[in-house]
Image (tube, rainbow over all chains, first blue to last red; front, side):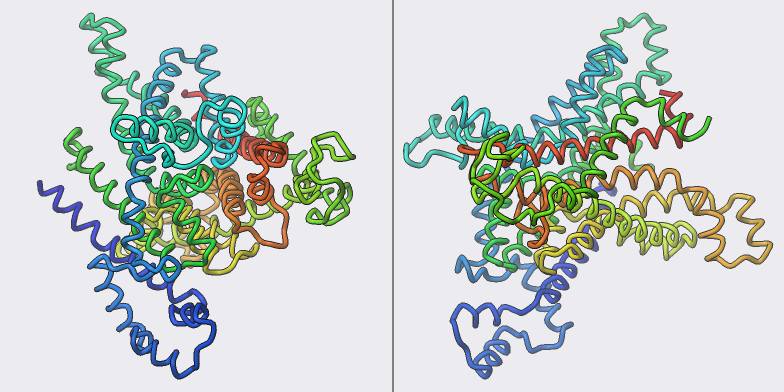
Amino acid sequence: MRYVVKRLLQAIPIVLAIIILNFLLLQLAEGDAVDVLAGEAGSATPEYMAELRAKFGLDQPLPVQLAVYLKNVVFLDLGYSFRHEMPVSELIFDRLLATVLLMVATITLAVGFGVFLGLVAAMGLNTWRDTAISIFALITYATPLFWVGLMLIVVFSLNLGWFPTSGMENFAMFYEGWDRVKDIAHHLVLPTITLALFYLALYTRLMRASMLEQAGQDYVTTARAKGVTENRIMFVHVLRNALLPVVTMAGVQVGALIGGSVIVESVFAWPGLGMLAFEALFSRDLNLLLGIFFLSALLVVAVNLVVDIVYSSLDPRIEVD
Amino acid sequence: MTFWKLFARNRGAVIGLLILFLMTFLAITAGLFFPADPFSLAGVPMSPPGENGFLLGSDSLGRDVAAGIAHGAKTSLLIGLLATLVAVFVGIVMGALAGYYGGIIDNLLMRFTEMFQTIPSFIFAILLVAIMKPSIESIVIAIAVVSWPAVARLVRGEFLSLRNREFVQACHTLGMSDIRIMLGEILPNCLSPVIVIGSLMVATAILIESGLAFLGLGDPNIMSWGFQIGAGRTLLRSAWWVCTFPGIAILVTVLAINLVGEGINDALNPRLRERT
């Protein structure tokens, strides 16, 4: 319990630093919200712009602006998107679910399949299976995500017609209940495979190395001396311990996964945060982009926190370190 | 054994090096074989590979895909190399200061590094380029800003383990300045892992650059593989070649750099390989 509190307290300065970084980036950008508004309106007199700046507090000294910004962020007020004419936080929460769905599916596929491949490679060390899996991991690790996505579309959507090219569901069909779930799952297949491929390579390598490391430990010798069968040693004793670093890695990779989802979502027009970021880029909607950035950083901090806590309950030795 | 003999024991690394040489050659001679501006209209639009004088086809505006790949090689290799150099430099400075001085300096610098490692790096890179306006400089800076923490952590660890060694204490006794000890004595002893991580970082930098260009954040005046794929994605149905070939170029280059990086690792840490 003390460990949980300690980790929570450690997260606070990081979140604070991210908010300040966000504020600095906003300052770094050319022009402020008033310039954007004036640009939208077509023409604005300097007097009117000064009045607007006073209204938004943009004429205050920087530390005061930072304090206001901090207060706003704490209440989850991330500013206003003038393009969408909606508060940024509302826009983000609208799209959050789609991204979380894609990420959960991706992590499940990448970790599950990666653990399996790593296991197969480690058990057949230096056989053709090991070599084939290593080459597969090398190639997927070097492939740009967006290209894999486009190639999958060419093969499986355009030529074979097995999966839809884009979107999350077929609105024109007005599906309800299970039919709707099936429809969304059908749309989910290609984006998930694309995003999972890159991380698959990572988990495969990690699992293989972790299995090999554990197989050389003393407890394995003890188990063998006791007469435990090789299969039981592998699947019960070694596998359990080898999984630990994979769990940590899954937490660390969440940040990278969000970055990857910007690309995958914009390839497949998956209506999540990544797609929103892509749209924000095109319409030069900096407020929205910063909001997405902030929320994804927050998500990474939260996931790391949860993984650390879960990890410490799985392996009590961690707290001592 | 010499470096080259150890390196050559890894067959994949030799193949990777050959591919990398070919890519570098392609990048250097791009202006010779494809003297025209790769953005210019070179002939019949949407020509399939091998037709109308286009080796790898042309896109919807009649731009030569092969010329784009040759000129794009220059962009990718240049940005990958520059961004890595900047990241390695910043990482060494941060890591060396933190590891050498320890205490509060180490604590502060490592908190700073941790923050940068927490931030989702690709979105951060997108933001930086969007704010600075897309250009070679802003892309290099953005990639370097998201890449240096790994180097800093590595260098810090090495400095921490080396700073109390006898040869460093001997330097102190001789009255050498801190800077001289850091640069002249400790740094050369931890260069091999830095070279390995740096070589792998070039590959990551090329992937980030292509991703940025794909999203439309490339330098608008310079041809790049990511831009070609981004521009060709609307033609998937009618002209698959526009997207396919630049993607293969990225894949092959990144793969080659990763293989070379592993070969360098084997050559610089030979004991590590014999153990596994």
